[in-house]
Length: 227
Ligand SMILES: C[S@@+](CC[C@H](N)C(=O)[O-])C[C@H]1O[C@@H](n2cnc3c(N)ncnc32)[C@H](O)[C@@H]1O
Image (cartoon, rainbow, N blue to C red; front, side):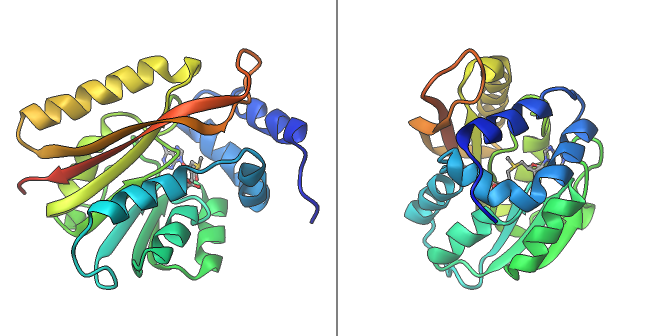
């Protein structure tokens, strides 16, 4: 299959903004799944490797044995990057069946779950289960709601890491502020401690009509303190 042009990828992504509910979004991802990996490469989408590098630079445990929950795993780009750093046990969860199918085909995940995050809670038996929880490219307006980060923290083992990313561009300003407020609030409640927050200038190529060049984004790494 030939690589899409930047203009075509832009059209595909702008078409996703027509629907505004989480269901509309996953329907869009169902239709995008097959071309997702090659299209995001055209956008110079580096969030999976940026998150994997951040986790890797702080994680000091046994990587092969660590259980990683990849939330909104999509086609599996995050697990692919984390594997390069020696991690080997991945559980994936996503609301799009077609994206999950691509992830399944990657052979990287030991277990997968289909779930619309924000509408369905994470399984109760996942509490305090994971050494690392990572969510990349999904904490943004119209996707996974901010309230989910509390559940992510709950699912991490005490001492486990939670790595999150978000976009810093115009349409996500309000969402990012709400996310950061929740992250701070949870730190004040003693649920976790901030390990690293990195603002990245060249996050990915801009696709909106109002923006040019690259948009910026951020990687957040927190460490869970107690169950
Ligand atoms: C930009 S992709 C990111 C995928 C992968 N993490 C990556 O970085 O390549 C966003 C993913 O989030 C999923 N998603 C968005 N909103 C969701 C929701 N409310 N519940 C479950 N999955 C959701 C989509 O299906 C899609 O696979």
